[in-house]
Image (cartoon, rainbow, N blue to C red; front, top):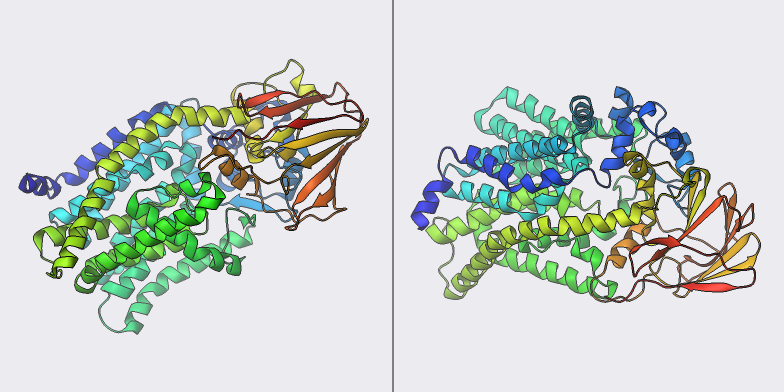
Length: 614
């Protein structure tokens, strides 16, 4: 049986066979439709005449649909300060959004592929998903060739490629049309590694030029393309013969490309300044340094164990340190088992270095499985070298009995995690898509009242305030009129007392230490994820007396906690709270939907409950 599997894994048609397998395992994604980030991107792709009349009031570009706008403004919030101001005034961004907020990303290579989608098949999400799947198949085909190029044509290279194909962490990234950029950056990153190897091993001058070109394409496809440099640096550290100086010179072209990309990126006004889930190392080096080890270990541990690092977002904060400790222990244990192999096998050492170095750029974002692609390339190369070395004994691993027992236990666990475990993960991922997107839709769907376009929608307690940024594009997609404005008063992950102090004022008091708190609702809960995303825009440092003027609404911080997060806030409107211009909503956790909110009488108060315990 083992001999038959080896023959299959080293068959000359394996790259094509695995590429076909990549298409087959992703077929369920064809029926996903457009979700989440796909919707605001669609609004940028369409011309103003194809969108609701009020769409430009939300901050959507006035010249949406033009080639230049798609190339520059498809990802994140528009970099034009006027559009950002409109988004905040309309209510797509909550009142606590800091003035220095910026989240505009420049991915022209990826944007061009989306532009083609909307010119060739604008009304077919199925074909857009097929486009994504085609890139994934190309990645699997290419990664098989790269593994064989570096590891030889033996069955270990085929095993590494098969493990990458089966990896359950790739399902959600490929399934999202909006996430195509990560796949493009990985595709060009692999081409960069291939050409760099050609340059260094075959002394191909064209390989040097092509390697730099593909690195640039990887960066301009997605910021994660910075992880491509992990391949180049690992090659210089491990595989490059000769002196350290010679190895350093081989990374110089890549460094120049990255500096050039970053210079252009910043000069054009792109970048992220949120202080929340994203950390720009060049802008906040100390914050990044503080988070690096914890985030990197979570990414590495999640990849090696096949236990998604997304779990950290959903578990009770009191358990997060235990989950991180589990990841750390897993990484350290793997290092102990792999260490003899790393000393004797330079290819395995290269994959290890590539895996670890790729985790550094990936740590600029909170640990998410969708960002593990570059890490996975190194991880599966390393795992395949380890399994092959243990089975064939070609890597001269120690014969010391305790080590052999430990190594075989690790081998069995890795195979279980990344073959049947990965297959099960993919099956579960497909099955949980529908319930997940159903919940996401409920967070976006504010209803469609007959007079919606003339009303100011006010959501008293939005569990995930960032989800409301999708409301205009969601309504545009479903041909529904947009509200006049939207307002989020407080997040909804805890209970609040809502008191009406006069005809135009509501005072909201959190029953927890601050309005951003999340109740203890069990070990795992959606509310913990929402709490994290409510602070995506940065933690507002508020003191008593701070005021925010939103035009028609003034927000006054009456009390704050020890962390300078608001706990008691007054909302003063310009008109009576009973005005027919207002459409009041509250989030009901029992039905997981927005329900009408009856504003209390002057001097009266009501309590809005937080999420129920799981």
